[in-house]
Image (cartoon, rainbow, N blue to C red):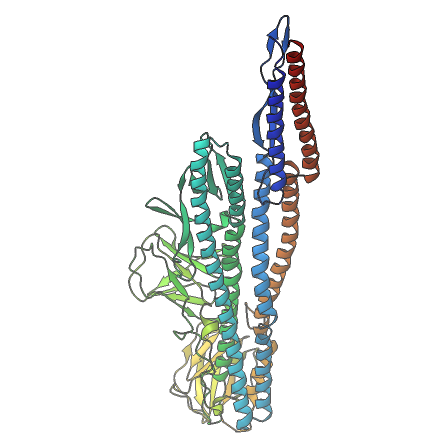
Length: 636
């Protein structure tokens, strides 16, 4: 026997051809997204013994492997999730920031214009043209706030649509991955092309949520979202979707369906675009809407209250300029009832008692037999125990809660949003410009007062007995006994001495607060009306810079401006996060490319090397043929 040159040459040609094929495929797919380069591993065929020596019998391609680093791929997925979340947050916040910077700038501007128009009324309180212009300014301001709320609602609708679109795409990917797993189980995970497609889909999935990949012995991979939601298990695909918001239908939640079972999913644990969209809606849009509603309530309450302190051009106590803050239209959306409640409590509503005490926050009302009625601030987590008196729950920051009928069961809960609905429902209800209460009563302290008592008018009510426009009413106070007695202009008592609680008196059509102390101090309200009187208009105009909101820490305008600044700050922070996340993602991508990507220079060198080996192996065939020919010729 002798060395089989032709067979050795044949194996060399075949191996070189296989190497050329793998290299050519790498070059052809250099620009294919998600392609992982492949390498062919050569090995020697078994040697044969001739005499006292072993001779090789050639070579073969033992394996074609896909160059893949699971750790690097995992880092890339994590980087993709973080970058997608950061980009989504920045895009959404940038849109909102532009709304507040452009259209939003009209809100404080129109409020200032309205204050300026009230100033004009104070200058010429009997001019109907100026009064009409002031009403128009009020309507323009209200319309701007309505429009701003409409834009925020539009952002919420758009965000919900994006969430729904993403869940649809996630389910499509889940089905594709299930089919791929079925193919991989048939080939025991050896098909490189199918594996590349699988990795590309998983990488795309990591844009939408954090992805955990669990390799299976069968060659398939199970996929989990956020570490808690199983999307693909072997060839079986689950699905995720949106559910009607509970307790607010326009704030859909997220759920996962497994067979006939549906589980609620916490979006904050998902990350990616889904987590960012839910965070934007719940942590930015809703607070912005609540604070806009707080401003609307502040405007309506402030001007309506000032109207009740003065007289209009007809000589009557001023009526509401804006829709009342507790009007059913202004109260829409203040209470959300959870579908899981088992009690009979119905008609739960929120009544605003003190706009200045509102924080613009949202609350969770819960009832348990152990702790009673608990009100939890959803932003700070601070808990307050409410007191039930009859059908009213008191103890909230500037509001009370009414239960029309029924009772709560253990575990029942409600969402409380005191400022919801106000911005979209704010409107001017005054039609007649004569209704602007520019005139105001004159308050005079008796010269014989010896104490430090002072009073401030809150409102007047002409429907109460004892109140007469054009007359005077005098209150004699004793802050030691917390008592008062009222007298007419003729000095006739309007009733026996009565007591009051706290520092407020509401009697005979007058509502006022008391500060200081005194045992026999008297104060007279002159309710005479004069067309040229502008006391109340001057007082209204002076409120533009008064700190009426957030427990005396902010003005009407600052509530809106603070929201605007907060959104601007969030946008800037999101921009910084995008830069950081992009750098981390690029670093991970570069690592993957350095290991699994196609290097054309390297592949070109391999192409040349394998071409030469192919030619050399072919030359062996030629040499073997020449030897055979020589041998045949020598024996003829």
